[in-house]
Length: 334
Picture 1 (cartoon, rainbow, N blue to C red):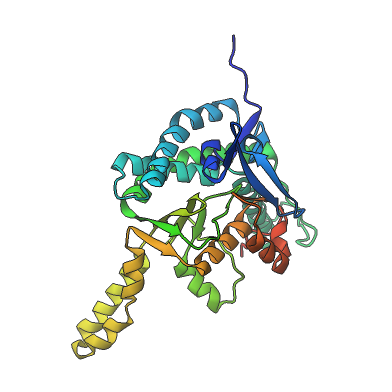
Picture 2 (spheres, rainbow, N blue to C red):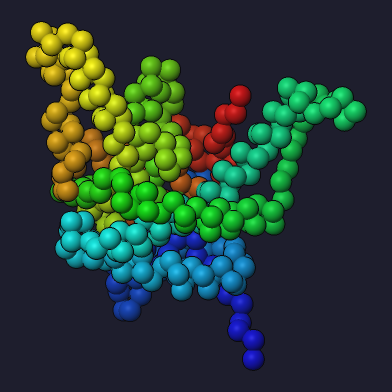
């Protein structure tokens, strides 16, 4: 007898969502805020981040057999020990692989793909890149639509292809955990992996770029992966290249003018680097505020929490109502 096709496919793993839920009578319940409507509701995790036939059955099986079990097992070890230093190289590899796939398996990522492709095609028409035999199109009237099936196929291909880069995240980037003792919980969402980038954000401030913004690709200089593990614990994985580059520039300057050693050396952010390179550090309220705004803005539609306090999300959405829209502009391709 053929295996029954899974109808209700989860875009965020249920075992991960358990970490933000409260068990009552054998059910795991958590709160969900709908950015679009503002409605808050308490639901069992079986009904959260679920779409019908979002992946084909072979991908459901691949996720269950190759990604979810080993990844969540290593994540639970981090939660139980509140440490990343005891992870084996294989466990780090499994978490990094889980993070890549979780980042790519959501509706939010499919929407990013859709807009990226449509923006690129529109740009090709606008700059008259195609040969003249193709009909000219008024850029103001141009509408490009990409179907769901090719988007799904591309999304699946990315989930599988980008596995090859797992060792870079597992072995080269710096891993740490951030403990939240503020009394304000970390949110999670229908797109729980957040890519931030303090290096790019410093340039965005100069350019008056609206917060929040993505840290771009997995290998962008200074990219940071933030994954809330529980309401009071977050995993942070960082590319440390900007600090290495800054240090090299300082040493080059000192080499040219040794008498200015003390001045140049004070320019290097020693205290910040010491904190970021530590295995564990504590969040302050402003860190929770910043992160919860990030995950609110970069989610597709739903914010998730252990309790019904979504004040940070609601305030951000009031200031920036565009984040309520699933079709909000995610890309600016010039």
